[in-house]
Length: 392
Image (cartoon, rainbow, N blue to C red):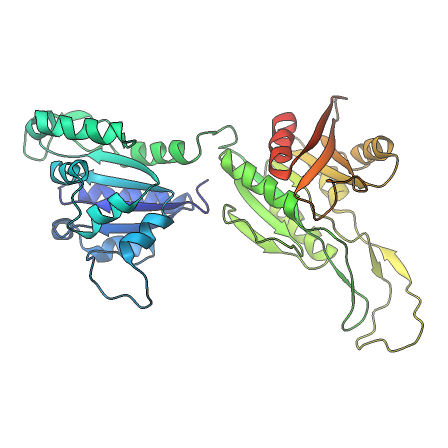
């Protein structure tokens, strides 16, 4: 659910450093990218190699350490972060942040970072309750940082009271909530298809279509924003594969896409078929390049991916698309039935603002229960949100 998200974890010098290892492990299990910054004192509690192994990325400990290519660490990490988390956050680093000091790589990166910030205090009870520490935390909160409440309990020094760092599972849950506040699909794994497939005519030429993949990408991003894990099966696209997906599978031909969808749908709760697979393929394909002055192609029907999934979907949801040029509602309703789908998203591709490569779309959503919703002219991301609202 955090695929494509980048977390910068700042680790300062306290006994709770060992808990930060579990934070990294849990974040990686959710698909997040994690970069770790350690203070000099933190390195005395846990070796940087531990975090490097867990995060699968280099650990930054020194603002002046050499890099392989030109890259100012505190600036690049600050820009890369979707959220910066300080865990454990000692009284000392909290005071630095509040006073605007920048005398090491952690404090420098913190000041340079405009992303969301989560501070997880960890210190002795007396330090936690000291007026200076309270004032510093208030200052950071007023500047937009979120302070993770410190639970009461037995501390490493033997005292009991507030000051313990929050448990890693609670910190990770809060990170998820901050990065994906809409968790309406958090328990779902969704198959999304996008782009156009191609079929060989000869050794160099292909049959294909004008699909850009933009609608599928918008759907994948919207599903991920709502907490779902997305399996993205795609053909040729004019836009990049979204970073938010759990996995991306390239399918060149319709047969390739069918095989990938059949395999992946087994472990999904829903499939949204936004791709435009080629409906036909040449019956005979020469190995070399055809050089005749006139060519007659004999085509045969490709397998129907949506109908294949629909016939075996059980209680899973299937959303299909109908790109039409005439009799939109009649053809869309027929497709809804023939694919055993739960809903069809129909659009007239001849309308201005509704074509394959457009950034907008105009669609009619028809559910199997007879409910009909008109989108009007909207961006493809807005349409993706409407589709999810009305069908899943």
